[in-house]
Length: 449
Image (spheres, rainbow, N blue to C red):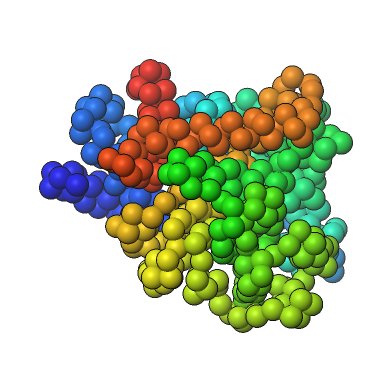
């Protein structure tokens, strides 16, 4: 980076932090984009003249509201709800709703900012948003979850709609929670519209939506390897997490011939050196999705190693796919992966590697698929669900998988186009510039609004 670009970056980040104090995750997400976009803007001054980067780091609006609900004991409870509508430059706001006790405005601003560029990369007409609440669904009864979802949507419904903002699920918000919210929305507006995605198949949902984020990450990885004359066959892969994204990442990796040797949850990591099989994955899905158990039960059942309180990054591998949560790979983890011969890191979760770790990947020259490119598969199928709802039809699983593969291949092409550096592809740079351009060109075309 030129000294002038570094000065511009430092000045920009100083102003951003002053306007958004105590929001380190948002700062991290913006810095990671600005690193690549500021040098590009220097060579393309129209984006500087329109102050595109400054505009994109200020959400169009943020809605913060109280959610009153009643627990099973008749006690009245209150939580905080959010919706960060970042940018609708290229389409209606689109992004998930997260229910977790640690949800904060900082987390949702970082996610909405990332979502804007991720949605741009898909090529579909979707803006960026994110929402949620500090409500914790764990340990709550079915009735309590239903009442909270209905009360949450009773407020949020005034700010969303099929041509305005189309939420979806996220951490803590699965098909059950989406269904309760959709039912409340439908009741309030007296219309059956595609105002939420991730719905059940019997009322407007899409096939492979559950699988899409995990499948998409593997499709991008496969494109990256093939572009560099390699493939997934017999590669040793570490996967973190054991939720939806991790499960279907592992499923697709097994199908394409890789050997997955780890999964994890908040309690610890299992290490299955021979490789997780299709049968063992089915057992783990039942454990996590039905019995709500911990991965330690997998280790006990199949007599494999279990590391309590640990993540998998100390285990030697050729490929790492973090699928759990943001900043789960710290600097030491990244260094360990590289020292153990890791060839590629592809991010199934949102921003799972801290900035210093990403710097190490790029310095080492390994293949690095950033989250805004790698986990775009989920929102891509959500966008296709919106299309199916508008057209009043349903595509087959095969048709949707074909479209998903095409979208991920196109994301790879965009990353190569904007990230080629000699024989090497800087996928972070490529994803950042390609996502930025899609949104920036729309903002320039629409003028100063």
